[in-house]
Image (cartoon, rainbow, N blue to C red; front, side):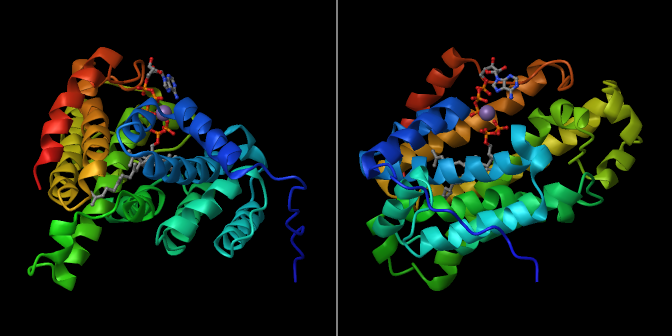
Length: 309
Ligand SMILES: CC(C)=CCC/C(C)=C/CC/C(C)=C/CC/C(C)=C/[C@@H]1[C@@H](COP(=O)(O)OP(=O)(O)O)[C@]1(C)CC/C=C(\C)CC/C=C(\C)CCC=C(C)C
Ligand SMILES: Nc1ncnc2c1ncn2[C@@H]1O[C@H](COP(=O)(O)OP(=O)(O)OP(=O)(O)O)[C@@H](O)[C@H]1O
Ligand SMILES: [Mn+2]
């Protein structure tokens, strides 16, 4: 039996406040959009999101970051052991201290975290997706899971909780909508990063879609932008927008003090599609992003949307 190196707990771990500050810095550094979103929610909830964001970022960096070339399946096994330790209340390193504290405050389950690691394992051995169903499983694992991780922190509106129509089926529907928001954002991320991923030999767009528009893998890897490519991108964006539309129905079930943040993060991320369209679908030569001034115009609209159930 392969003996994995034992988890080595760091000696003097950070205090809880120091650990949350480290998580805040990581969130602010890696994602302006999500960081801005967390500032729109109450302190205890934003700290919990920072702790979850940091864990997700560390998980993603294992396969997507600078140390990815050293990452093996055994690395992810060790990372999963560390996760089990955190859920047992035993932090291994500094930022684990923040996640352990968050787990003590909110009813968060471990399975979505395990599922995200399973998604990262897919990135270790897969660089193509034949069908949208295969891609959807990947998107659930790396992004739909984030909706499941964060929903207990965001909380649910009491009117929604006590409403007579709030049947188990209704609750399941809202969970589905949380997952769909994650999938929608991952699909957005995939369309934004087609060029970046192609440079690493990765194509997330389903090959069945490329064939539909008579566009080849080789042309994608070369960054060919023509009418076939634009048609393919319009098709992908249209499908991804449907996931946002579904997810929007669930935002109203969240606590009112978290709805502004989620509406803002939803609109800011979906705004990347308009940036791709403004760039005439050239995601190879130009990174699509929402300029800061435009992000700010979304905030009052997100606030208004957040007032409605
Ligand atoms: C405001 C708020 C609630 C933010 C959530 C922040 C959070 C914990 C995000 C985790 C992001 C992360 C690092 C995941 C690891 C894998 C990964 C990279 C996933 C993709 C994210 C993109 O991150 P980024 O923009 O930094 O990408 P680059 O690395 O720079 O390329 C993903 C696209 C996943 C994002 C998924 C979500 C934020 C889940 C959204 C769902 C909810 C908040 C549930 C809402 C509930 C209902 C009922 C609708
Ligand atoms: N991975 C990246 N590669 C190239 N440029 C990037 C990258 N990430 C951010 N930028 C640049 O940072 C600026 C802001 O982009 P953007 O809003 O996407 O930032 P971000 O932190 O990636 O936000 P989010 O991760 O929430 O999308 C833009 O100029 C964008 O080109
Ligand atoms: Mn980013």
